[in-house]
Image 1 (cartoon, rainbow, N blue to C red):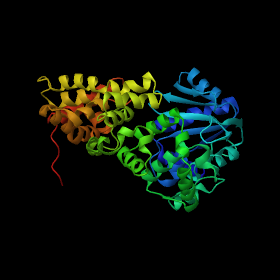
Image 2 (image 1 turned 180 degrees about the vertical axis):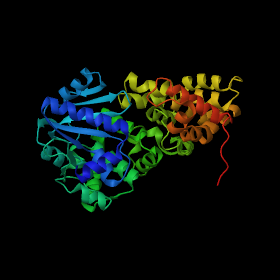
Image 3 (image 1 turned 45 degrees about the horizontal axis):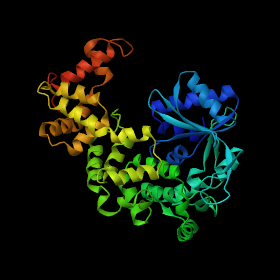
Image 4 (image 1 turned 30 degrees about the vertical axis):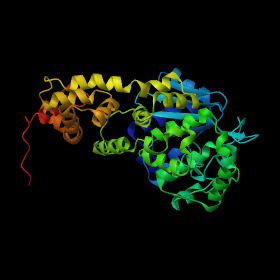
Length: 419
């Protein structure tokens, strides 16, 4: 095994490792060359948590994705017929993109690019920034071989963002937003010639050529950032936030809600399997201070579709229903509160934490995050086996573990005195 494969596997969660193995097997079955590219390589080399799994194949990427879906190992989230790419979501919740290695040629800034199939080297050289232009071979003969035609690994080491060409920001002006987002996320410096290209592109006003759907795609990525407020404030400083809506500038950027949400997020234990729709929750916070007319204008400007609206438009009503349940006197034990909140939608619970006026609801959510979740995570499989006599493979093991967690939460398990 190469060093890079070892580093990669140490960065992936079990669910991500399973997704990678599935894509690898499907590509081998289709007899196409497969590479891990983009954000996963950048984050691995930079020592960051891997959040994106992007694969590039020298061949029919959409067929590989559909073969995985056909085998009932994932669902098809979207297909881009123009760029020959597809996004799939596995049952574990892991999403990934599988794209054809390609070259994109732009007739003018922001125009629809002409797409032609390419080799992996040509594909990487045509990407936005060098830190995103790194690939790792997942093919049997060259598994673990890193491909880095623009020295992106060196730029990551020097904590620098560098454009792959002198036309990067002109060809696709949405990269202006991406540049500021990456700078805010990683706290990297912008390389001097890239900084000059950025200033020249802004002086030429190329940001006006960003298509509506590219604006939406970038806004979606911002909502999935670990600190979206920092990105939004950076865009506001650069005068780019108004591209989404002029109404977002100044006091209507809901900084207080994002800051409170960040504190709640920091309370969640790192290894807690708490599912939260950050897109819907962060978009709700972003829209909260806008008037109905301003919201409608933003939705129209970004050409948002119904399935993109529902996660934030319906969130408040869903949270209200949860609030009614959380006020119930029947939740009179810690284990009952835990059982209710661990199975609810995380975004509903966190929205209640942000704005519920019910003291009992606030207290129960804080206890869940700060006390109950850490207690539950401390209950090991070994402890459950010792108490119940059941092996983790036993059909009743999960139930036995739930009962043991409940016993800890309700104080029925006496902890040994500290040494």
